[in-house]
Image (cartoon, rainbow, N blue to C red):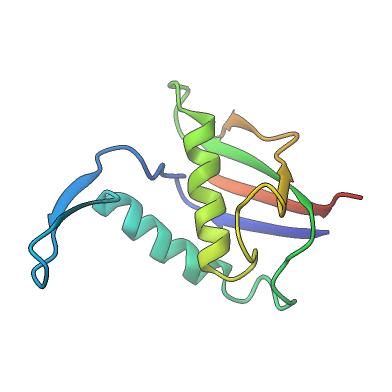
Amino acid sequence: MIKLVIEGRPITKKNSQRILKNFKTGRRFIAPSENFVNYQESSLYKLNGQYFGETVEIPVNVKCLYYMPTKGQVDLSNLIESTHDILVKAQILKDDNSKIIVSVDGSRVLYDKKNPRVEIVISEVS
């Protein structure tokens, strides 16, 4: 079992996406918001030092408890997608496909005004 914590307000990847232009090809592409990019970089820094094992390639359940600073509505599936992408980029998970992340049982959004964060528990599924 792997337990991780990313301190700070969780940010979704899909809100406020940007359309940018590749200057080499001239083609436009969709990129995550600047807020998400900053959150991802910060999260990678915070995860550094929390996990020293090998990259996970076996079937796992990734339970994410999102502690938000407000009681407003948020999209749980977008939060989960962002967290999975960060875990892959941090090389904690090999990929976020359904052969590795087989479930997200127990994931939910909670309220903590003073200490927003995401608590992640990765456990093997047999």
